[in-house]
Length: 423
Image (cartoon, rainbow, N blue to C red; front, top):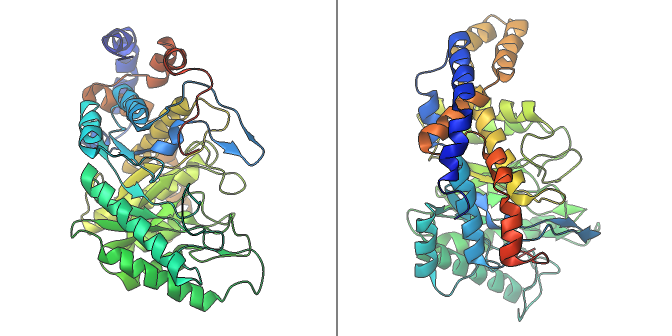
């Protein structure tokens, strides 16, 4: 609707300059023969809740033109996908994105070339007309009736996902405690596992359950699924269809996330990612905006670990953004995040793994650093752009988004005071 034949004109104006940059990197760097194919196959799901302006407990400043319903959220992700051809899936959050007509919603998504990624349950908020409160937890709650309500909600989310063609459920719990003595840690853990077992039993045979963890917030003394070890121990108790999900912002400062990723992958319990970035805590900033080297190091471990297991980079793990855009245009921020993730992946594919392993075996620490940093410092933007071009996307998605004045068009259509559902 917004892009149309303008994309061809956009690419035609930039093609000669792109070809010069692409020829240069191919003349200077040993590009693996399958790198462009792998970039083309790599799709990053967009979460429905990232399409509107985020906020803090102090306020929220909408930029206007936000999607007012699920149909408009799908349209926005379709727009992103038309620009970059790498955002081919949408992840829904229930009940924010519940629908009474899944057949029509599925057909609408197909019109935009979109599939449905993981569906996400919500027991961290009380909903309108909800019988029992989650103020003191959901799956861990001391009251069996509250636990039953939370379990049933997750089962309902699974059913909605089945209707839409999703294949996975993401569970994130805010369950925990604010003060010492408030909670029996052992019993809270046991109740949570028992609740998760009921949810796991409702999974179809070809589904996965992703259990996310978070060090703190909204409970600041303890979180019942507070780190990767707690998630890992729980999913091991559930079965082969249960995995740990890593959110890059859900770690204490200076955590070695790349090591966590490597070990979970080695154990066969890494389910996927929520990509974002952080400076101080769970800031939900644009992926790669604060710690681009860390993002590269994570992908370095991913590529190494997936290749060691013979895994399909594009399909065997879940790739999704999880961000909150407080001061940026949400669609522009998502375009930036997708490209940052693609760049980190491309840089990881450039690592000379034979040379790196030889340097490790020789205890040549300097050479190890040089090999990694050579790949990281390579400007891979032309490689990412070439993959987009071959897929039919824009050479410069951000420039085309702005040249077309897409946000102003959305404001004209939807209004300047709209607020995305769920936020």
